[in-house]
Length: 440
Image 1: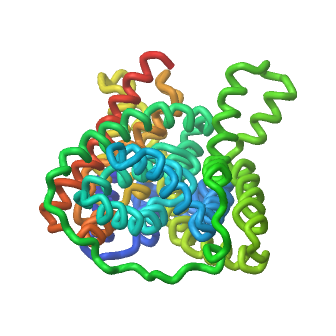
Image 2: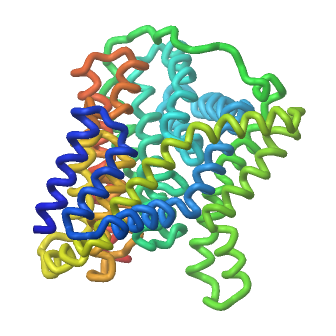
């Protein structure tokens, strides 16, 4: 009966989001409420469970998303992102243009939300394609693959950071394993798959961009070195923390300091403060302009926070109503790897719901009972869930339409390019998790 209740709940979630066009935040709260009541929870109990789920999930994540949005805005509007892009392309040359784009997408994608990074880089992609006479998809697929991998695999992005909190996974180790998976995944999905479009018909980039620059970008752009260092500073701090935990004594002061600096909130706060100076004040921008840019950037994460909080509410209802315990009993002794199960659940939700974040959050709530019942690494479970949430993007995904419209593709061409690329990222990520599970 509990599984039937979950299945009915997910069915209504799909109905509300896909058919009735209800926003995912409202739909998740309604479904969480309905599942809790159907499972026998009292009215006050289910309301309290929803509140705890929202509060427990958002906790530090509100700080992570807020600081991440601020850092992304400073990198984009200061001209640092464009400096990184053009310098890498000049260094690699036309023959290795895809490598330059992959690195650019990765560096820009680490501190920025997918949509922000995509919209920011797409004019540069169009300029490159026009100047070197290459198909848009040949240079666009590597960029999209890099952004997608950072979005699905790497903290401090919302989905992997949130799932790591739900699974109580070590955020630094999740980042380290994510970086290991990211390299082959981007090469296969971005470089190798992208090369299949080298003979794709040349198309003129659409004239869809506002050419006006922000006040920050009108100043002298920062140097390449400082741009790259500032963009990657959170990753550097978190990666250093992961290494420190492996080589330093457990009770040593050095390990405590490294753990503090590697905390996502602290690492992003340090990066934002550094960026205010390195990308702002040092370049001649006023503090008022910098603060205005950062204020505007945070407005865009409000709805993301609400969706993530609602996903946490659904997760908490599954736990408090006893459904999680029931799932534990069913999964004991199951022949399937927990990593494969997490991937399959997230993939099914992604195909049905469209939103990778909602799919990952919902899957995490269903998979949560597996933690502690098997010896699977919670960090790898985070990555497997994130990988599953990227598979088979289709017409119910805003990313599908974003890619289609910007590249001027038909529905069929978008399936052949964007959807296949996303699925390759997802499958390679799963395979990587299964291989890593043999040694960690």
